Image (tube, rainbow, N blue to C red; front, top):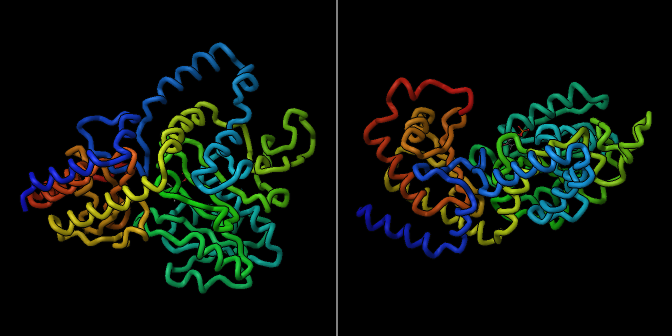
Length: 412
Ligand SMILES: Cc1ncc(COP(=O)(O)O)c(C=O)c1O
C-alpha cells in the first residue's frame, strides 16, 4: 500500500470535517497524538484565564462575598442544568458534585430505599472497579441488607428478577468500549420492577444520550473525560424528577439540607435533586469544568457521533491492514461502540509505553488491553493514520522489547 497517498486521503477527510475548528479550542502539544481523552480530556484554551479570574478576582478580591455575588453556592445546580441537555435530562434533574464513586454510592443507597422488599443490586462482571467496590461497600455499610450480584454481559438481562432492586451498568464499557442499549435495558429492568443506575463516564460528551426518553431513573459520570474538566474535576449525577422527594441521601451533609444557612439541629432535605448534595462544592474545580463543558455544548452531538464512528472504523481498518497481530477487543460494528477502540496483545503494556515515547498517547488496561480514545472534538483523521503507522513501526522494529517499557508506573 502506498502510505503517502493514504495519508493524503486522511488529510482530505480533515479538510472536509465540520468539527475541525474545535481542535483550536484546546491546548494540544504539537508533537503529541492524544488518544486518551477518554481518561483525561485536554486543557481548554479558556481554562487558564477563567482560573486566573476566579482566583484573583472572585476569591482574591471578593473573598467570602463571592459565595453570593459570584453564585458559587449555586454552582452544583447551575452547572447541572447546563449539562442536562447533553444527557437528555431536564432542568432541575442534574447536579455537578462530588466524585463519580461518591455519587454512585449515594444514588445506589437511596435507590434501595425506593424498592422495599427487594435486596439485590445487579451489575456486570468486569464493570469499572470503583462501581463494584462502592456497591460492595454499600453491602457491608447499609442498614438494609443489600446484596451485590455480578453477571456476565450475556446473562445480565435474564438475571433481573423480583428480588432485583437496582441494576447498575456502565453505558460504554471502559475496556472494550461496548455500548449497552440504554433504552432497552431500562425498559427490561422496569418490566421486572427494578430501577436502573447508569454510569455515563465514557458516554457524556462523546455520544448522544437521552435519559428521559429512555425513562431512566439515575445516572452518574465523570467530569474529567470527554467533558474536559481537568484532573479530579467534579462529577455529575442525574435523578429523574419522579423520584425527587422520595430519595434519602445516605450522606446527608449540610449542602443537601433545605436551608443550610439556618443551621438547624436536625437534617431536613431539600425538595429537589439538590438533596443529593453533601458538602461544600469545589468551586475552582467546578469553574474549570465549566470551560470544558462549554466547548462540548457548542458542538452538534450527531455530528460528533458520526465522526467518532468514522474515526473508530478507520483505526480498526488500518490496524487490520498494518498490524494484524492485534485482536480487536471492541465490538466491530460502530453503532455498538462508544468513542474508543481497544485491542488485545500480550505485550500491551510495553507496546503502549513505546508508543507514548513516540508521542502517541493511549493507555493500557489489564490484562492485555491497549485502549485508544477517539474524542471527535480534537482527534483528527490524520492522527488515526499516524498513530497506527507508529504502532506498526513499534511492532516491526520490536521497539517495545526493552526492559524500561516493562516497568509499571502507578497509573497505566
Ligand atoms: C466507568 C467509570 N466510572 C467511574 C470512574 C472513576 O470514578 P472517580 O472519578 O470517582 O474516581 C471511571 C474512571 O475511569 C470510570 O471509567
